[in-house]
Image (cartoon, rainbow, N blue to C red; front, side, top):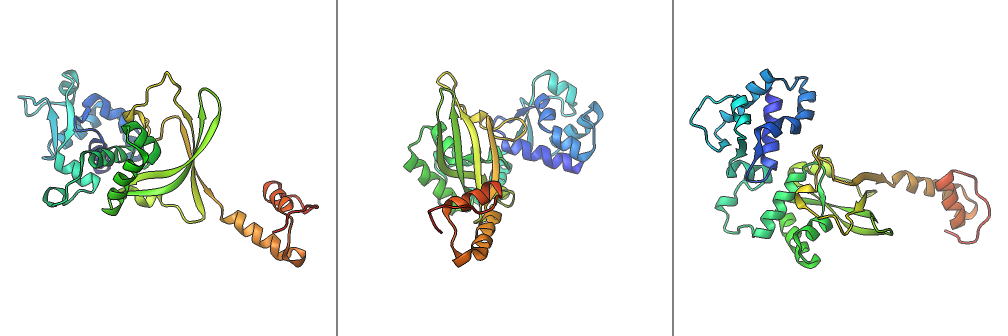
Amino acid sequence: MDALVSAALEELCARPTHGIPVSDLWPALSGAFRAAGLPPDLLVKRVLFARLIALPVINLRPDSPNKLEDVEAAERRGARLVATPDLRDNFLGLYDHRYSASRLSDNQRKTLEHVGATRTSGVTQTALGNCFGLEAGKFCYVVKSLQSRGLVVGNRAMVKSNSARGGAKVVSTNLLHLSRYAKQSNVSSYQRIEITEREPGSDEEINVDALQGEDGTLNKSHVSVHDYLPAMKAVCDKLEEASGKVLAVADMKRILVTGSEVGTGHGEV
């Protein structure tokens, strides 16, 4: 049950300031229920709900005159669970924010909150800047300022987009995560994050809140980490075996792609 409470607190902290309806919390915690080996039945919901509202950092909105309100009554009246500002700040890494002489700007705060909402999935700097309607240079400064304070971590990524109107483009950007998720998002110097996504058509509205799906993944995209170390090692091994340490570029490409033997070619490496 402690693991479920922890997962629920993370879910509430990652949500906007208005929190989440009680009835919507259970689908959002489906993965946590499976990991804990507990069914999302009424008994488990009652216990988890009681544990949450007993915490001073969790509020039920709107307030109920019944201090012993159960989960069924809260769902019927459409109540929402809301994390306190202090708890949400701690989730974002703003432990000393209230006492710091250097406060976050509105754009910095908004960026940090939306990066936090994506949790382990992350969000690309380009997509977030476009959704906020900020120029690339200005938004880059916003991100750099958050990185300098240790609040956000960025990893280089290549985004391959296929437009609904046809055509494709490749954009180099950063995949942003909160620092608390940095260990899950780190890649080595031999690795590169590649994201394949379909751009919204002209009839689709870009919505910041829709950047992340219910399962925590980036909507309409596929994220993969390509490790180029084996390919680099294969190149070095083939050069070591080659006569005069020279191979044709065409042959090298064929070896890496198909694994076939060296033929004849002109370009040398």
